[in-house]
Length: 187
Image 1 (spheres, rainbow, N blue to C red):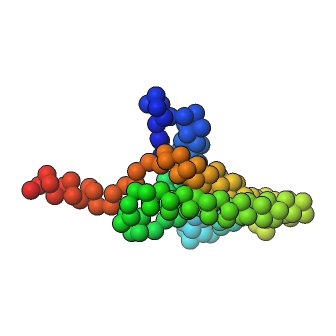
Image 2: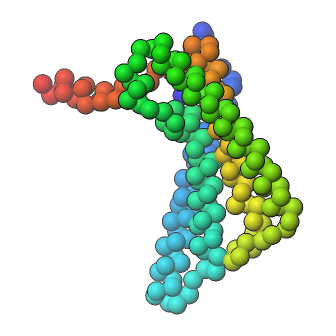
Image 3: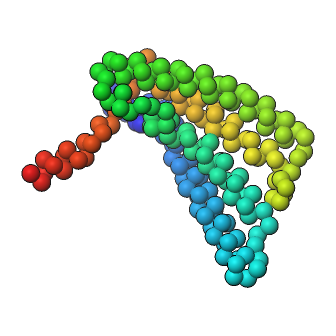
């Protein structure tokens, strides 16, 4: 979602968010690999040798929660998370800008509320000292990704809203553009 300014270079804030998005994508991929390996080795170990990693299912669940909430940041930045593509694609550019800006404003409100409530829940959970049932980690780690993801999505929605106001939104991808280009080449 890289938008250039007048000098042909991306503003530093956009570059920082692009870097953060790359880090989130990399971490989510690594976490998904860990989930896959944990579930695979737990299942094969249980059925082939009678041994399994105690806490493996809880670890897979914890990593899946992190992937879901923190990884949503990348989808929001690309505007692939909360949009009705059919309506946007059929609208004039001015109407698209208004709808995308409104989506950003609604996202700001919802993520602000979610960030606040998930912060309270995480703080309470960490404060009680509760530990996981089979995995010896604080229970608050299961609520923390909701807070982190909500803050990251809040930042992404703010970016979309500001870009809509400044008329700096990147153009939407045209659905079926690849198919049309292929048809033109093949005849």
